[in-house]
Every structure is written in structure tokens, then in C-alpha cells.
Amino acid sequence: MPENVNFLSNFIHNAIDEDLKNGKYAEGIHTRFPPEPNGYLHIGHAKSICINFGTAQKYNGLCNLRFDDTNPTKEDVEYVDSIKEDVKWLGFTWDDRMFYASDYFDKLYNFAVELIKRGRAYVCDLTAEQIKEYRGTLTQAGKKSPYRDRTVDENIALFSRMKAGEFADGEKVLRAKIDMASPNITMRDPIIYRISHTQHHRTGNKWCIYPMYDFAHPLSDAIEHVTHSICTLEFEEHRPLYNWLLESLGFDERTRPRQIEFARLNLTNTVMSKRKLRQLVEGGYVSGWDDPRMPTISGFRRRGYTAEAIRDFCEQIGVAKSNSLVDVAMLEHCVREDLNKKTDRIMAVLQPIKVVITNYPADKCEYLSAENRPQGGGTRYVPFTREIYIEKQDFMEEAPRKFFRLKPGGEVRLKYAYIIKCTDVIKDSSGNITEIHCTYDPDSKRGGLTAGRKVKGTLHWISVSECLNAEVRLYDYLLKNETDAAPVDFIAALNPESLIVLHGCKIEPSVAWAGAGTKYQFLRQGYFCVDKDSSKDHLIFNRIVGLRDSWAKTSRKK
Image 1 (cartoon, rainbow, N blue to C red):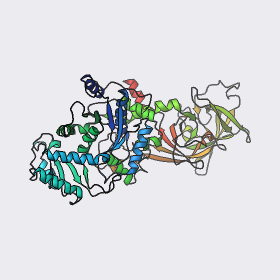
Image 2: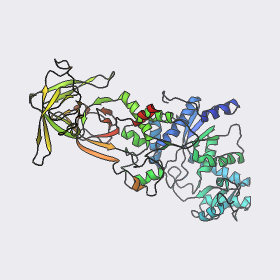
Image 3: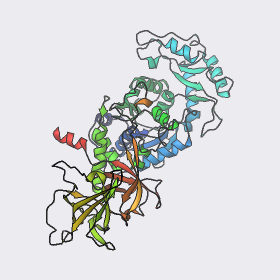
């Protein structure tokens, strides 16, 4: 478990404290994280992971990882593997407590039979459309199914035949017998088993009936001796069914699980629907589930976000009872705060233009000392030659008065190096600038006679002959607008500039052997990460975040 997880007081912990005070759960606190293996986890799941594993850690309890694999039509081993990797990467462990709802299929079937025997479940022949019609509305009570009064023996026989595969998909379902006039529509005889002749990724063809999530969830919790089932707010209306099932099957009130809901995470400019994320992947709008634009944990990891930053973000946003929209700039702030302490600084020119220092020896290459980090990061040596690259935007031929970068007749300091002065501008036949000619002050280097001479601008640079070429990918938000609410045309709302690829960027040679995931701060540019597809012959860097921190500025104003 991560050592730097903080546990601020919240209403979930207050509820647990009250339970313990009342003598409940004497054997200790036990939570679970129950993802569906039908997609990759996203940042919203990271919040749930931190809450569930963190709560268990706070109370010296246990937390299970349990896969809710009750819908084989959408599940895959790929998703199981990715979920395990994500939870571990975030810094949490389940030890030997990894389970699947499918582990309990036999027990869940027997629980369903027990409900039938107690007169609390029945086999229904209505179609899905008819069940929806009979359910009623928020202002109108539902109607009883004509099959609701089947005898116990009839229901047991039909349910057994469903299990044996005698009926087609959708031909029959098993429903809980509760109250068709309940003000909570969830309690109007919900479906608890359906027929699906689909091969399961773990149980194969053993089963052709599968429990619904609302049935499997509370009973799996009870089987695992979970004490607190912490889930998102959309399950609040399902809590009465959760409790009804446990009560109907005779689980002890003092030890059976208690469901507590918290507000899900919504981020500005971010797609937070697994269905929409799947649409992006399957439609080819992104390169995959780990595309660095995706809010998936694997996407953030590939982009260069750190587990520490994500945990810090989840802690800072807190645990609330009502849904709200969190500014994505807050997440980026947490990433910057963490990377600022960890990453080496290097120089990279993303849109290069050549500068020729005419009075510098043509055959000379000197290595200048450069700081890796402001404090305690050591030093490295960067090559300096007659020809260097600077950023195109750092030169302006007709510059305004307050332009303090390079301009004709103007002086700037090159980071770690000399002061240069622009003496000439070389253009091609079309009038495009091809080279900038400068002279340098040889005594202005650190330790030189004029090292203390002040100029207003300082530029980063790269040696032309000693640099490395790189591809740099600049990532932006997937959605153009700031709300996560689904627009009518979701695809039309995508940001066409969510990815800009720059070729021919120039990087310090010190990064030649950097492995995938290595992070740097490019001076004056932002934080960047070596992509997993990078190689020595084709360096690829992903921009993690820029240097500007709008959230920090806003927070200080508050």
C-alpha cells in the first residue's frame, strides 16, 4: 500500500465509526472494489479504488478485488488483466483476495432457488418490452405480471429448465417478487436472472443463465464477509433492493454488508462514460484504450501522469454526497506538483530555426555544465557549437518594444551559455527566414569577465550537429466544451486539435537511452514523457502537461 495516502475525515468514515461504536462488524472492516471487466478503468474508477482500498487501510482492514463478470457478452480477459495492472500501478494490493462473481455462480443459483421457495421470486414470460410497460412510471404504479402467481413448484421447475438450456434468450426471466406499487421503480419486481446462451470467459458453456448485477452484488459481498459496500451515487436507489435481498435470505443484520454511496467523479472537458470511451476506441477516434488523450488509468500512465499525483488528486477532491463537476485543471495541478519534484530539466526545441554564431570557431564543440534540477538534481553537460537551434517564436524580425527575446540588434542570453546579439537575418527567395546570424560575447559564460552582464531575455537552445531528432505529440482535451454532459452529437463535440504531432523536433543527446515512461521538464515548454513506442532510432515524446498552472492561480485568488 502507498505510504503517502492521507485519510481526511469524510461521511463514509463517520458512518463506519458509528457502526463500530454500536458494536457492529467486530471482526474488522472489509471493503471491496468490484469492477466489470468490460472495458478499461478510468479516472473515476481511480477515485473508487482510493476510497475502497484506502478505507480498509485506515481501519487496518481488508479490501478485495472482485470482478463482476456476470455479463459475458461484453467481457474479456484483456480487461481483467488491464484492471489488475491499473490497481497495482496506483499502489494498492489485494494480496490473495482476488475473486470473481463467477466464483459464486453455484451459490447464487441456490440463493435464487431459496427465494423461490420462500415465495419471493418467480419465473416471468413477459418480453423485455412488456416488462418495461408493466413497470409503470414515476407517477403511475406498475401492473402485476400474469405469471406472478405461479406456484413454488412451477417456478422451481421452470427455473431448472432455464438452467438446463431449454429456453431461448429472452424467453423467460426470473424476477424478485416485491411490490409493483413501490414508489421506487427498482423495487417493482426487478429481474434477477436472465437467459444468455453465451460462452463465459471463465466458466465456458457451463451456464446459460446469468445473475443480474443487482442480485450478484449484495450476495457476493455477503459471501466475502464485506462489511461496507462503497459505491457511486447512481446505486442509491438500488440500496433498498440490496437490503431486501440480504433480509429475504436471512443474513444477520449485525454482520451483513452495508451499502454507502458517494458522488461519482465528473471532470470538465472529459468523457467519463465507459460506453462512450468504448465508442471512441471501436470507432478509431483514438489509437486505443491507452491513448494518452483517454481518461483511462492506462492512458494517463502512458501520457506520463504519476500514481502519486492521481492519488493526491483523489484525496484533494474529497468524498461528497452530491454530484458536482471538478475542473480538470485541478488534476493537472496535482500532476505538475508531483513532476516538479521528480523530473530532470532538459532543453528541447520543438519548432526549430537555425542560428549561426559567426564569431564562434567552426570546428569547436564545448560541453557546458547544466543543472538537472533546481535542488539536488546534480548536473549534466550539454554540447555547444557554432550552429544552434532556437524556437521560431523566440525570434521576431519586427518586434514590439517589450519583446525581450531575439530580434535584429537585440541581445539574449543562451541558457547555461553565452550572450548573443543578432546581426543579420538570412532569407530564401520566397522571403522566408532560413538562418539568423549572431555574434557571441566569449566572456559572458559562467565564470567569465562579463558573466554578470544583464540582458532581459534567456532562451533555450540545441546544438545543430550534436542534437537528436524527435517526434513530439502535443495532447489537449478530448472535448471542446467544459462540461461532461453528453451532447446530442457526441462525436461532433470532439476537439479536432486534441492531438498535434510535431516532427523534426531537436532534443539534447542526454536522452538517447531514456526508457519508455521516463519523464522530463522541457525548459519553457512543459513536462514530457518518453512514449512506449519510442526507440533509439525514433524518439517519441508525449506532452504530459504544460507549465502554466491555471488551477494554482485560481486557488491562490480564492
